[in-house]
Image (cartoon, rainbow, N blue to C red):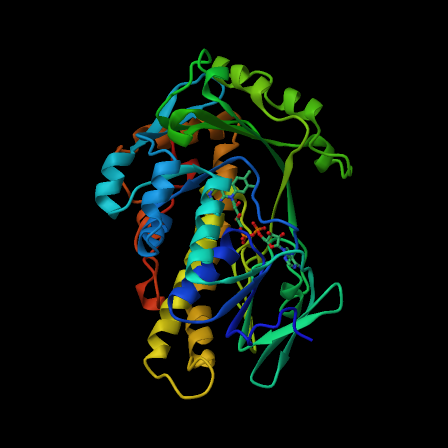
Length: 421
Ligand SMILES: Cc1cc2nc3c(=O)[nH]c(=O)nc-3n(C[C@H](O)[C@H](O)[C@H](O)COP(=O)(O)OP(=O)(O)OC[C@H]3O[C@@H](n4cnc5c(N)ncnc54)[C@H](O)[C@@H]3O)c2cc1C
């Protein structure tokens, strides 16, 4: 039994987060009929900030949504890294110059604003949006795939895209793995700017303070009327194997000894909820038959490269580009997409790119959280970087690759042990 009386769609998307919505939009813009299922009763996102690099804003532009996202968000002038202990500047990126280099801006947005823009884009494009539907099983069937929901209903289409997040049900079809616990936890807080105006904050920049087993991020939101902060630290209780880890007492202790601007920011963090940081080991197979993973379901990262949502947006765009190419061979039956070819092209390029990002995010986290001599070596490397050197960014902020041969080489790492301090 289908969940609606509408005709069978070409594509089912499970999950109405940023990944699912943007993929549904991308495929609908290619002329496909897409139905999206979300388990929550209402669509929504947590009310905190999100950084969107040029490899995402380029795609938002392609969908005709960048103007609205920019209007609702904020275009910062610099991205600055500082030492969390003494507040000294380590390195900075000139984001206006970066925009010239990559052709599209680096912007910061309220998550619910981006989510709302994508949701309205889906509505306008004609995506069929269904809430209150929790998918419990996925299966391949003749010529397509079927999903079944907790209330016993089911639905089928030519393909199913599983954008069901970190705890993806569909992922279990491909691998028997568990999220990897990093023992780090994030506190967030998005507050009116007046609350932080006296705190030595940068009004127009993204600022990252890196410290021993902790870091602190600040940036403006919504035209500068709001201010977003993220405090991340390693939890001693998690390391001790306790279940009750990441509590506010640990937050306070983790940032003892950090500089004034960080200390002043901490009271504005939300203290009633926190996000434990998990990723998963990279997966090279994302497709089984007519079921494909997308977004955090496929590649949940630690957030240190600010690329989780960005990669999810790229996934849907890449698949839609390959679908568009296939539609040139439209047949009289069904959507006309040669799904085997389109899904194979998707799986040929995205897992390797996302593997690189997931692993690089882990190593950037290590780099940020050093103490002692390694902290000094890290600081020396960062201070030596030229503001206009993009060697660390070209492989990720440039145009999204559609084929493996377009994937750029990664940067050359600098071993910290080679640095004299
Ligand atoms: C502190 C923090 C900061 C971050 N900062 C950034 C950043 O600056 N930039 C960036 O790009 N990324 C960032 N990320 C990562 C980013 O938030 C995620 O990678 C991204 O939101 C993943 O989107 P998604 O749609 O794949 O998954 P999700 O957002 O998890 O969405 C999954 C959706 O599927 C639904 N769902 C789940 N199971 C089912 C089911 N069985 N049936 C139906 N529906 C289901 C869920 O309700 C949800 O709506 C950050 C993450 C954290 C924790």
